Image (cartoon, rainbow, N blue to C red; front, side):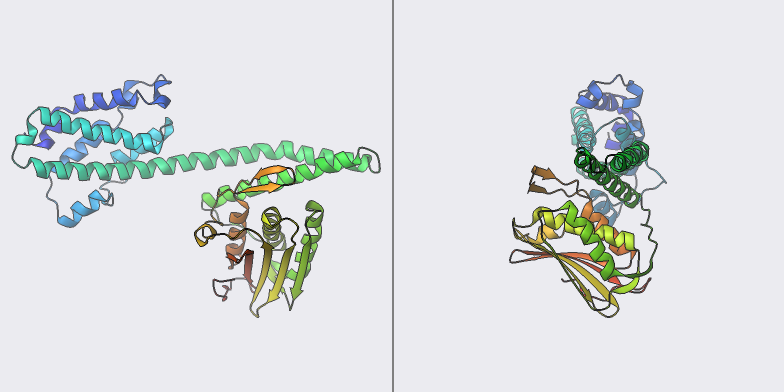
Length: 382
């Protein structure tokens, strides 16, 4: 009996074994999920595999399937749907792959027990079957990951929206208290609450920016003619109150005027300075250097710190890459989206954000074209 005929004949037994295994997974074992839900699309996956085994196949098609790169024959395959639905019931990628691993083992074991390995062409059938399973795994994992990411982004959007109203109330209330209690013994405590509310607002804004970027929404900017030197100095003055124990040296040279979104660029600068202040060698200053390069402007934040390997630098602007820092109030955990937001702001202006580490000197550079719509002509090195 050929493997394709066996799969069709024993489909019910194969699916039952796969469902029995799925029920042992912790996520599913604690849920009252109907057998029909657990077996959804598995019979169709098996039928597609059986049909595939019966079709002629070129060597390149064989390689593509073994690598999970075969072109799907429909808008959404049974394996893709299976991966998406497994994400909805809470299975991880590893558990989805484990399901396919068991499915593969069950088919081979039952077929072997039925004498299938003694049939003519058995080895060819086994090779084709494994290629088809690999393709199904690739399709399921891709759709599973997409679904998980969609739910994560939806959650961020909902949480961000729901937090805005109570946070706005806190900001308004602390502002009113600050005015009412000015010069009183409680003014320092109110000021601390205000700073905390401002920090929460900035964090929420960053989360929403990250969420929009993950959903493919380009960052919106409102550029006007701005003296970036003056804007940078103004932002640093605000940052000095946030980091009273850190010396912030500002050096601006040349004409730094151009078409920029001042608020966005100041946000990027604040993220870079905050990062440098946290990770600098204690007792050393943070330098903010602005330079005119003709059609481009650079704002570089420089600090002394532990050397950073090149492979680590390459990931700095990726989202959710967290680092630890020993601050004045103990160990701090960064959420890992500050530098990602810097990169998005640079890209929205047609510029770049880069990082470099040489002999303990850490440089983060923001490069922006002066004209809106122009691309930065500077090389990709600091």
